[in-house]
Amino acid sequence: MRFRTEPSHPKHLNTVFLTLKSMPRKSTTIPKAPLGRILMNNGAHRVSKEALKEFCDILTEKSNVICTQALRIAKHAGRVTIHSEDIDLVIKK
Image (cartoon, rainbow, N blue to C red; front, side):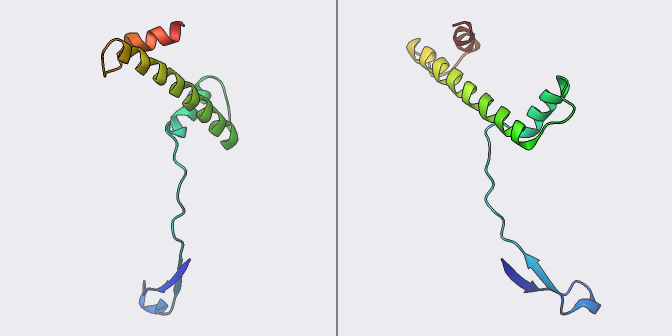
């Protein structure tokens, strides 16, 4: 934390403002707001932060597995680009 004085108004020349250094945020690969909407659209009235984090973690983990296998299929076919057929093959397995 650091303190600074900044005149915001002539009456408050000696006002001390508390400025917090921003804490590093833990970023997720998938944004949580759309996941919350998915849960709400499927009947959830309320969703806790813990449930949303768990849902995000599970979807990220599953999508990483799918992407890894789709990349392996694309490389086997001699391509660098993953096509929708590669993902379809992974899902059908």
